[in-house]
Amino acid sequence: MLALSMTSPDSSQEASFQVDAGSGLLLGAAQVASPNCDGRPAGIEAELIVVHGISLPPGEFGGPWIGRLFTNTLPADAHPYFADVCTLRVSSHLVVYRDGAVTQYVRFAERAWHAGRSSFNGREACNDFSIGIELEGTDTLPYEDAQYRVLAKIVAALCAAYPRLSTDRVVGHSDIAPGRKTDPGPAFDWPRARRLIAAA
Image (tube, rainbow, N blue to C red; front, side, top):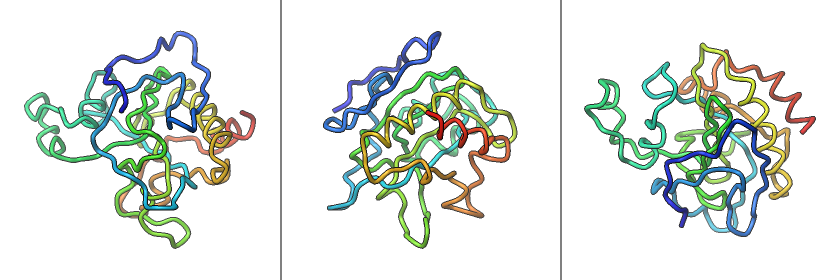
């Protein structure tokens, strides 16, 4: 089980990342255990990386709220928006914060609850076969340089550890749940992200 810690690595220098395939941990990331996960179906491995955008409250950055949401400890009375979402049971494998710090909430071998109702190339239930990476951000505000660089490093580490993953199987939440989800949104620079991923 992941050690519960609400701290992130020092982001003054961006971490290098390596995946320990045996433990399913991203070395170089802080570890916080989310209860919102379960086992992947038998024989199913990660074949897709899904990029999300998240901010809590919407449009605001910083604070402990994403971690509190993913650990079912978000206080309903801390912000008017929280009353609507505090009972959700959601998670993602990783969150990349605005400063490039990374926290892992779910081991890669487990199924995080990030995609919801979704489909990729006609295959339903993307949670079964994907890894979810949340970027702290919104559809309408530019993401930070550090987030693009760190995302590229993470994708490279994941592809090195899991042979069914590849750099051309990185999609947005909006791609697998069109009409229902819009993130990471128009503010996310996909051409830039793909250049960095290809070069990592």
